[in-house]
Length: 109
Image (tube, rainbow, N blue to C red; front, side, top):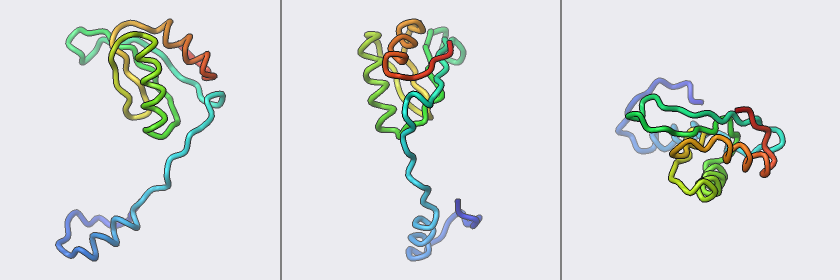
């Protein structure tokens, strides 16, 4: 990352240079067989609602969204994909673990 501690600048050329020098390498997809996914139920910070969380993915956001979409369809409920984890509404640990194994992931519940 950039070693500059600059917070704001009005110089557009300097801002452009800082943006370009601070770009991270594009994240790459790791094949499913090399990933261990943890599947668990979470009830905290969700107003008592139950959410199944699958975490530990090493994918680009686009691939993660595709996997999340497949899991949501299989479970018949909503959810989201963010920060290398997928949240599915409801208690679907068994279904999600089974589906992820079919996709080739190593799963820990």
